[in-house]
Image 1 (cartoon, rainbow, N blue to C red):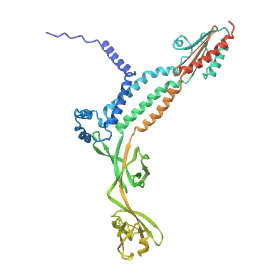
Image 2: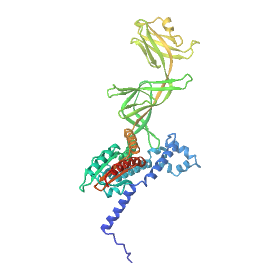
Image 3: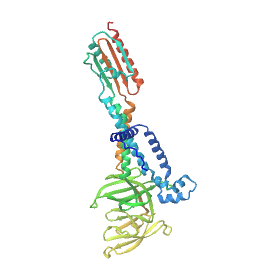
Image 4: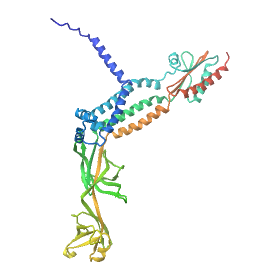
Length: 483
């Protein structure tokens, strides 16, 4: 038995059905109905992202911690796979948070496209003649009988308009009547759309930073340590190496403390090296004062003491010339003022025979320069070596200095200038939208009557006072005319 099939819709009906679907999608997207739910979801996501992974732990660390939490909500999300599906370990870079930002951007764009043409017409192509179509939408209007010269009355009205900040000139219409139109603050209509554009800039900047931005870390040896890569973090928390377009050298690192030993500050001297090894840029960075170069930003983030490495602060004094040069010396380093006379530290004692900290130094020289010898230099008696050892070059010991690895954070965010520009644009748009108003006044003068009307798209109370004063002025001039 054959099954009866419903007849296919004719082509015009199918086109109309598709048109209805498209119109419904457009009307929904261009309305405020989806805006509120999207904003609520974004706000909830921001709250959740603050508490989901506050320590920025890797996915492996999170899996170990949540696997033991059988009775918690987060443990349930982990066991069901929802935690990793929604990328809660890095929520602000997750696919669904990005989707919310895209939907919000599309909604703002649709609202702007749907409403902007009408606002453009109202603000920049106003209806200048006061007729019935204009009067129907106005709440402020006054009509007075008149018998006199319409041209003179129109001139007096223009002067009254000007006193109240509405520049205008009477125009004689085809019907013989005189029309006046004045306005102020026409561009305030566009304030909300400037805010829309600013939000789109901020959202697009965030999306650009999500796809093309980087943020990595690296620990570098403080003494001439160089790096041309950083370690970035995958979505699962695993680290991988990312090459930089430049090579950066840490010329020096300084760590200062208060008397009680607590941290006072730390800073690094960075040098950007050119392809030939020359210094293209140099800058000292500290916490809150990064270095920007080639679209990358280098932050001073942390430091780490090198437990197995330290340096001795020594100064070499030339007794003949009086020259004094300071050195930071590691155990393998040779130092000195004369290429034929070098020194090297071979031992350190924090308290040598009760005389305090001291270093054991070997003098390396040719026989013509006195040959090899060794001696001790004491920190508590800087003049000891100069006064007790017969040599042109005397040493002073300034103590042992702890060596460090400086922790740097390297970031590249191509969306940051867009976000910054969007913020400035938003402040401007909010000022225009909240502190300015589009006000309009119309007048029509015939041989029989005077008709004045006005409107403001906001701050109606203030505009009502302006219109009342104008109405009093109009009544005063019209009342002097003969009946």
